[in-house]
Image (cartoon, rainbow, N blue to C red; front, side, top):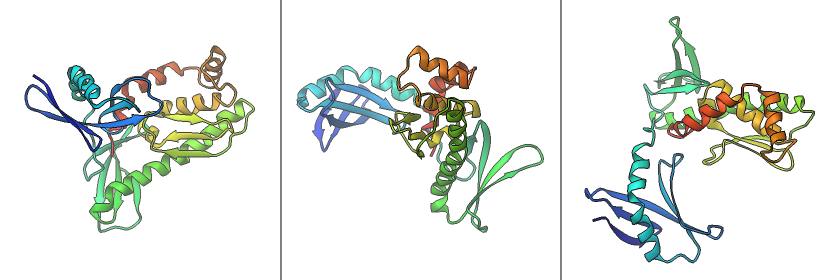
Length: 244
């Protein structure tokens, strides 16, 4: 019999039939119209979203009824890959092996071996390694995304505002009404055509702020083979959130 421990400090503790405890963070939302139990790949765990007036008892009952679904989703989450010495990180679809070089200076740099393998060398203290790799990847994403966004916008006879790179959990990119574009830095971990598809997608929103047939015609104009990288992102996108 599955049991629950009442809400305490916004955490609902579920206990499965085998005794495994699953802590579920709870978030109340004024915009939520119903209870929603979900698994967020970016956070690597579950979340229970409740309408502002939802009762604790109802939240417990809802979570208990769905613990089987939750257990199955958690089991299929990609294994996390920390940015540590020896870890393999894909950059634009090419594997890079992280090598800690505490005896060196220079931040982070790429080293390509004669056999074609690529290493990402990281200087400094061990406790700063993960942050330095993350900063490097964000910088690389910004360096690559910005000129491509301008190129796609120019092809549509549009000008863009600011281009920012963030660690977004639910969107790979966005376009504001002012023409500002924002992208997830984690796109640098995807194959190059996947990154390019997302940039083309957001550039098309400079003309059509919707997902109408006219919008998709613009995306196809910018990237005729967009359906393939779009399918890759739907199938493998959650894996990108498992790094770092």
